[in-house]
Length: 247
Ligand code: GLP
Image (cartoon, rainbow, N blue to C red; front, side, top):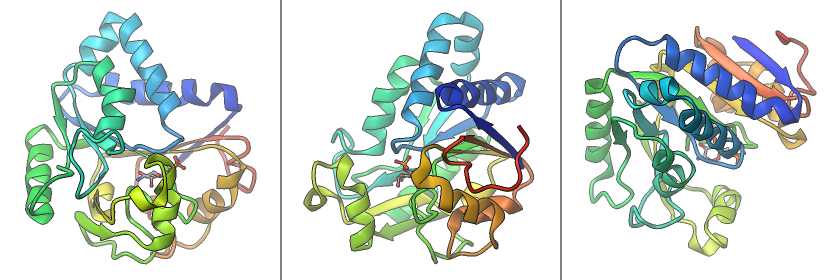
């Protein structure tokens, strides 16, 4: 695991450099997985700017397929609260990916739709890099604490506290959908590379638990300790509790 600890102002740049290093080094078609939240948008903004400013970067990005790690259920795909709408707004409409692969937020059979998504990922070359944020309770995607780790994808019924945590994206907890669908922990671990992004002191404790504590389903992000190719980008505040770091 490579842990990069940087000043808050350099955080997006270092994350984008690491994404670019991955993208430019792949010579086969593949899928890059993205995650929504409040941590990732500055990274996507800079990635979109790099693609706009550098033809070689844009050409390379155009050969890739993109994927959203999770999605809400029971809402129209065009609803501004969906992960797809947010990713379109923050990144996809600024680049021209070969294919956008996503769980359908209005799927009548989300389990069946998940199988379609996994097939599309396979046909597009497999998940080369999955970018992740980390929730305050250690969740990755919509994989909440104590969910089983052997699922490739999972349909999740959100707990009340989980819906409270998502309220900001939906203009109030009453508007937060009751269910979502996510790449499961097994699906995440099948990605060839992973990147975890966290910033701010509110993440310091959970980052420490995930990266240096026991590997346990109680802290879903702790599973990353078992993956061979993980890059973690943290600002100094989020890294404050760590003993080990590479820079
Ligand atoms: C949501 C997303 C996750 C993301 C997490 C982190 O729950 N479903 O994919 O990792 O938020 O959020 P934030 O970046 O706002 O801390």
